[in-house]
Amino acid sequence: MDEFLIRAWNAVVRPEDTVFHLGDFSMGLQDGARVRSIFARLMGRKMLVLGNHDCERPNLVHPVIASLEWAQPPAHQLEITDGGQHVFLAHYACRTWPKIRKGGWHFYGHCHGEMPNYYRSRDVGVDCPDTGFAPRTLRELTQQMKDAGVPEGAV
Image (cartoon, rainbow, N blue to C red; front, top):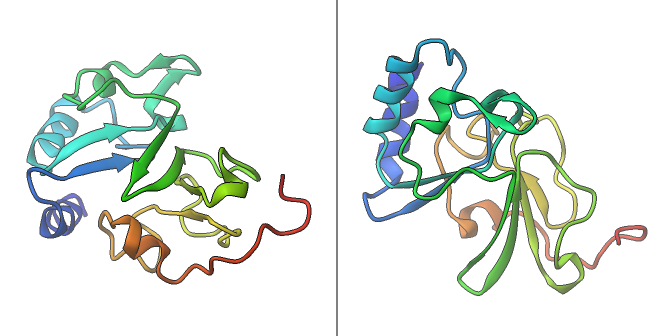
């Protein structure tokens, strides 16, 4: 499985690309050498939004995760702009997010493709049916989502 995921990642990510990983980078953190080896083989600048399996306790990043050469220190959430689009990144799904009423997107992991899209919010884990087990661009992730109005009750 590791080899398949590494090949899938490197098939779509170039060395100059930035990839935002939305948590739970690796299971089996007790094997730090394996985790570091996998990380080193993945192309691109890697940024981590911390997931529940990346921490030993809520505010203590696991030493193996902390030892990896992330492009910036891992964070619990991030707000970025991609092609003029505002994107809120978190490990967990949110019912509301920054700029929800101004066209902002919300991407999350954690749910393993089991939670349906909600307005401009979706699970972007590599195990979702439409990701092909690899990182995807904003355009790819949003092409099937409707740019509908904010649903009643979404604040």
